[in-house]
Image (cartoon, rainbow, N blue to C red; front, side, top):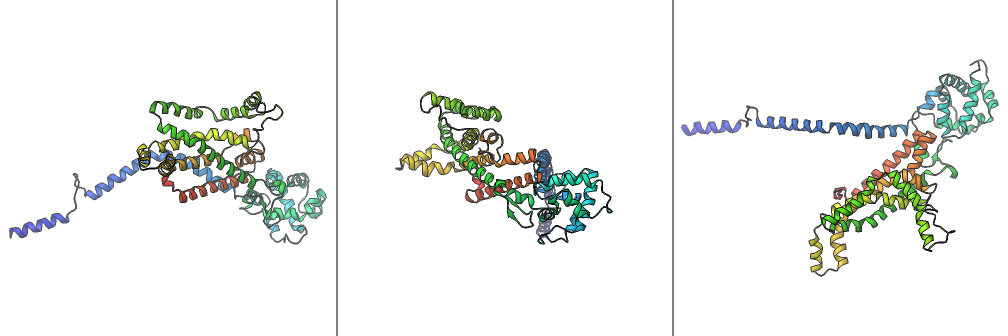
Amino acid sequence: KHSRVSSGMSDTTANEPMRAADGTPLKRSLARALRRQKLRALGLIMPLLVFVIVGFVFPIGQMLMRSVENSVVTDTIPLTVEALRDWDDDSGVAPPEEVFAALAADLQIADEARTSMTLARRLNFEYSGITTLIRKAGRQVGDWDIPNDGPYREKFIEIDDEWGDPALWSAIQAYSGRYTSGYFLAAIDKTKVTGEIESRPANESLHLMLFGRTAWVSALICFMTLLLGYPIAYLLSTLKARHANLLLILVLLPFWTSLLVRTSAWKVLLQEQGVINDILVGIGLLADDSRFQMINNKLGVIIAMTHILLPFMILPLYSVMKTIPPSYVRAAKSLGANDWTAFWRVYFPQSIPGIGAGAILVFILSVGYYITPELVGGPTGSFISNRIAYQWSGAGNWGLVGALGAILLAAVLILYWVYDKIVGIDNVKLG
C-alpha cells in the first residue's frame, strides 16, 4: 500500500510543470525574460533603425516615386487631358476645336495660379520648345473671354503655327497620365512622344553610354586596386608588428586628407604643365611639345580614383591575410611544391574572401563617385553620377534623376546577387 501511494505521488509530481522561485511556471518565466531581453535590444538599436528609415529607406522610396510620378500635366490641364482621350494621334491632323477650347480654359486658370511654367518645364523635358509655346499662349489667353472668343483652334495657330502640329499633341497625350514610364525611357535614351517607344536622336542619347563608361572604368579601377593592393596587403601581413603598423599608417594616411584636396592634388600633378610632365621633360623622356594629356579624360580618372580607393582594397585583404597561418605554405613546400604552386594552390584560395570584399567595396564606391570624375575627368571622363547631378541642380528634372538613380541602384543589387551566387556573400570578410 505504501508503494502504491509513493507511486501516485511520483506521477503527480511528474505531471506538474517546473516552477521558478516565485512560483511561476518555468517555461512562462523564461519566455517573459526572453521577451524583456528582446525589447531591451530593440530599444538599443531603435535610434539606428529610425536613422536608417529616415535617412535611407524614405529617400529611396521618394526617389522611386519621383521616377514614375507625373501628376503635373493632369493637375494643370485636366480639361485638355480629358478632351484628348477621344483624339486619335494616328489621324495625322491636330485635335478638334473642343481640345483647343479646353486648353484655353486650362491655361487661363493655370496662368492665374502661376502653374503654367511648371507644366511647360515638365513637357519641355519630352518635347523641346514647348516652354516657349506655353509662355506665348499664356500672355494672350488671359485676355480672352472664354467661352465666347472662339474659335480657339485658329487663335492658337495664329499665336504659333506649331500648335497645329499633331506631334506636339501626341507628346501631350503620351505624358498626360498620373504615372509614366517616360523618365525610365529617357534614362535609357528612349522616348514615346509619338505614342510609340522610339530611340532618341543621336545627339540626345548619352545615358546608356555613360552607364557603360561608368561600369567598365569602375571595373578597371577595381582591377588596378587589386593589382596594386594585393602585394601591399601581403607585405603587411608578413612583416613584424612594428614595421607593419608603420606601413599601415601610410596606407591610412589618405583617409586623413580631404577627398577634394586629394583630387585637386592629382589635377595639379597630371596637367600638361604639371609636375609629372615637367619631370618627364626634364629628364629627356618627352619633348616639350609632346607632353602627355592625362587630365580631363578617362586616364586621369583612373589614376586618381585608383589612388583614392586603394585603401578600400588593402584593408579587407590585410584583415584576411593576417588570419592565414604561414605554416600552410611551409607545409606545401615541404611536400615538394615550388613557391608559385604553394602560393596559387594554398595561399591564394584562402585570400579570396578578402579579394571579394575589397572588389565589391571598390566597385560600388566607384560607380557612385562624383567629385573625382567632375574635377579630373572632363567631358570624356564623366560618370553617370555627374549626369545625375546636372539633372538635379542644372535642369531640375527630378523625375529623370529618380529614374537614373533607380537604375543604378538596381544594377548594384543585381551585381550583389550575382556575386553572392558565384562567390557567396558569406565568404566575404571585411576584417
